[in-house]
Length: 289
Image (cartoon, rainbow, N blue to C red; front, side, top):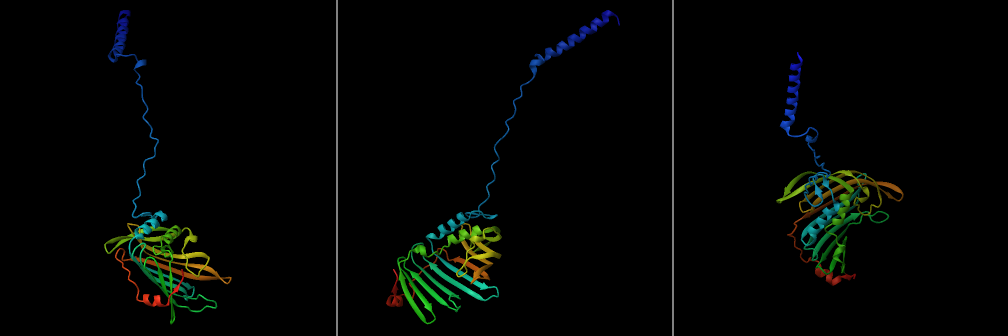
């Protein structure tokens, strides 16, 4: 290659390189684009709300004992219903220690009610079987009680507050559902009402387990069995609780099996009439103001 040929090639290369810059229309250093970094999210995603089956109740069980107890109390406060309660304590060998059965009709939150209770148990020392029956009626202002023991019946009239008669049992449900860890295991329908089936999965606070007289301080509650039916309003329509425990009698550890059941029916359709023993009560009454 002679000198003239080399010179032509060099000129051609310069023209090509300058042509590239001419096409872009900018200098190489000033053509670098400015990149704005994307915003990095700092907030946690909003959790999906857990569906509530009833106040304080989800599929995971009772998540707020106070919400459930309040709903139960509120929905029964001004309505009528029937209440059935059974409680018993048996010794380890199956012998009955005490039993208390009660049925009640409540007309409304502040009006009349009628209750019949039966008590049987070993209540004196030395132990003596002592069956007794109580009948209680209120017209909303006064409370009349008939106490029946064998062939003897006595009557009393008091002006006790309606608060002295806890037919709704909301405080008991508050402690009960604080004592137990629960789970919804299914549902059923009774009289066109959907009910959620709740069972206990664990005993978390044994000190909250409801007891029954005359069992005092208990130790080592075990063998828990629990089932409840709760409607969508939060009314605990029924529950059954049973557990084994130990209490101290005269310095001796005594094993007991405690069972309790509560059932609410005829909600909104219960009426209360004056009992047939009212006239006899008025004739022979002992006033206890």
